[in-house]
Image 1 (cartoon, helix red, strand yellow):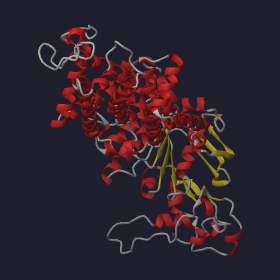
Image 2: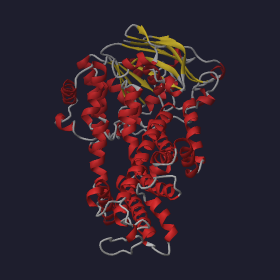
Image 3: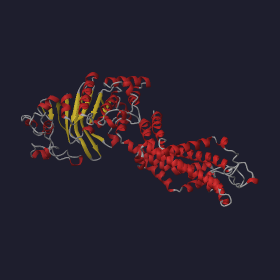
Image 4: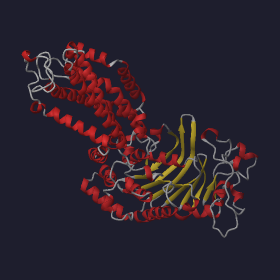
Length: 320
Length: 288
């Protein structure tokens, strides 16, 4: 369905993203994890063809969707994909809806634009979709303004808009960041159900490893604009090879009876302007050696997963 | 859809401007004034152009409630008809200015780049000319009269509307819901007309409202200098101008049109302030 190969993105001379590869097929959920500034959202924007609008460009690699190369698709053609074949759910539902338009027309517009439906058909479809998203009294909701709704409800409306034109691929960029924990769980479950019911391909971008563990089939761990480890979710959680992945997993709170303290990762993500030489993680890595500061590691495939670490083969021998 | 949201916005907010005492009085006066202007021929007790030299410079009394001017014309009737001239010229000019300014400002703000710089430079240039000079240019080209006045007022306020609209669009363009709309595959025209404009329009309407007051003053000024309405068309400015000759003999000729201008402009500004409060846009007006 979606096949990203060796993607590199540049803004002028800075290169915030390089060598990112992954693929998702129908009915599959891919998680992209990493801290803020690791290039997760940029990856999503590349797939949506939004880079030219913010002054970036794809310098390397290719993005293939539905068997066709969409890397250099002109804006006009991309518009048909956006919202049509590819739905994007953004991270801030509070401000993702036009405050002056009622809910109904906002969702209707998507189906009218991409499917060429009439007003009445589009509204029927909207009500239908709102219903499947477990929104009570969808017909009434259509006449509401965004400010009359709760955050969780707005996020469902945003999802409804992403689904309105029946896309094949859904990209959710931190869909639950702005929501309450209880609502987060509902939204994640909802997305999970949608993937199964509609046989969608879902790319779930998040910094929450526990969300990934619950929903994803495959994951890509990103750090400083690169994919550092990727593979099937069980494999990554059971045998993380990259020290960064190990650290992320160690950060997941494991319940109160566990006597261990919450752990963090010392240091901060480097910004685009000071990506370190060699392995980008080496300044924060507990296992770094001399080679890490000079040579950028290639992906080494171990079993079903792959990690960009000089010590990927040995790392899994130690328990995470 | 834009119309529908505008409609909702209007019902919701313009109504609220009438809620306070000041808003009610000022707004009520303006509505009354508009009605007077529309029905002037039926309300005015005399023909505004009928001369009666035997009764020139008559003091206020019966039947000429506000007296007569140097040709014996009824001042009240001329003030009533003058409302028609003032309001229609100012409102037409501001409507033209607002339409052009919103179009230019929205396009400049949305497309940016060289186009934006070109538009803003030209528009800012118009701001550097004094209003009277712009009016003189039009008078030189098409002769004195209400058309010149209208265009002069329109150009005088163009920069204000353009800058304000541009500022709104530039601010809104970065909002998440506009990004979301782009993500859903909307065309630029749809984003601009259905999402950006309805959200940008409130402060522009308020500034337009306030500009009508300024437009009335400018129309009176141009009329006073004889660049605006030509006799016998009654205009508040022109009436004051002709009244200066008999300032001490018959002060009512200059006082009543002057009072009409003052009260109208005060009402417009007070109501404009109430609108700003009702629409809660004080912050957004600072951007331009």
